[in-house]
Length: 205
Image (cartoon, rainbow, N blue to C red; front, side, top):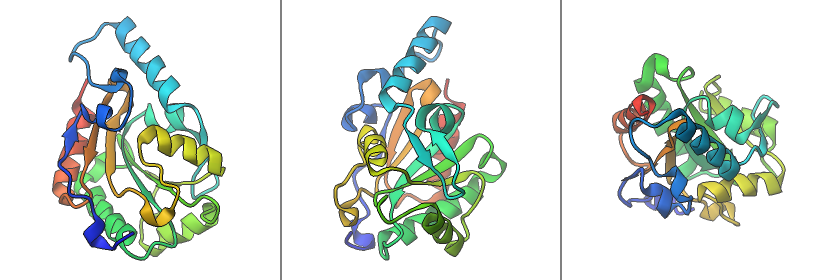
């Protein structure tokens, strides 16, 4: 990765970012008030798209991608790898400031999911040490790894897969899976702007 200058400066795309990311139309937000059948169908299709692939967090706990990580809450998703010495630490620090701006909503209604792009080297203990080094080893912030094929599956569905860790995307993905609302966010947005995006997603129906 080419240091902080590589932080992507493409504009923030709300909702319709699903199309940009290659996600199916079902993930583009629908009407504010939907019938129970429509909501149920939306959730079933979201589960099928994101899959129940299992990832392992920094504490060695397994999580199903859709049911455990996406469905229960609003999330902010980023990618990183432990060996990164350029953009990754900068993004982690910005996200930590965002966490502080969210206050009590973080860890309850809003989680951060940081997924390694180097699962061959980044096992749970390595991710634990990384999180502790930056003071972000917190219950609402999951640093995730897994079998390489599982990590690849998840990142491809998110539009964040890269075959080379150094070339991984720095784009942030904010979403509320149950409402089928997603946004592609620049990593250089201010913590206050990121917190505002997440709060709006949290309130979306």
